[in-house]
Length: 286
Image 1 (cartoon, rainbow, N blue to C red):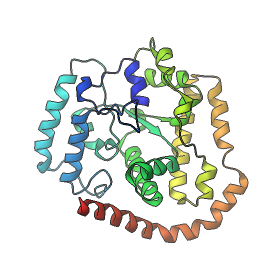
Image 2: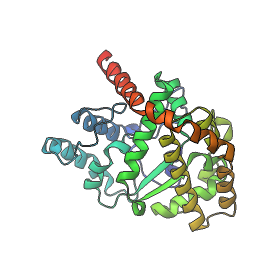
Image 3: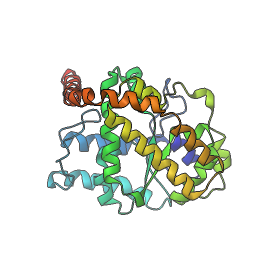
Image 4: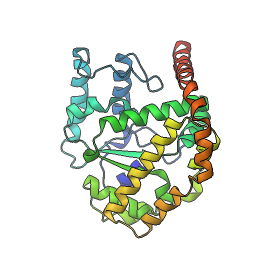
């Protein structure tokens, strides 16, 4: 959704025939450049991973065996150099961002945060993966992303904000990216509440006994998006929206969370092994 809105604001994404086409489950389109997605897949494969099997953290993108892919990336980027402000969307960037940062010094990163349960539910519906697998993947993607993108070069936004005040949030993003705000109002009108299929809160995460590490990471990302909005004072309702999300974590919920923290800590390693086993089995089947 966000990439579509930014495109409407003037962000160049490449020729239309090079973008991933819309599908029945996403009629508005994915707005992902096929070339960047394919190259990210090659990168992950070269490092022994895939989108659903993140490479180990000790893998480096500076290895000489990636020189061929660096050349391909430079050729991919070249046509965009004359386009002014441009960008691309690909969830795999969460795993490959260091590679692109070397090629594009100072590149800005937009992080669209969604409730982990919403992401896990979407993956279950689309890919048939388990909720535990989806939650673990959400954690890895977001953790690696914030470890790689500095606070000066990233902006965190939340999916929910576009159903509260899309125009205010788009103006904040336009200011960060350097996009003109002349088309923001028209672009914000593209957001339709009826297309939202699921909505979960922090309370749902706690009730579902999601790992504390996932909940804390999610809360940190929500807090960062809230703090940025308050600092920029883009809308009077920003502070109210942040307070509304804070109220989702009630004192009773904190008590329940603390009650099963020891139990969840003991299960973390087992969950990670399940995550790896599912991904490896799926790739062997292919």
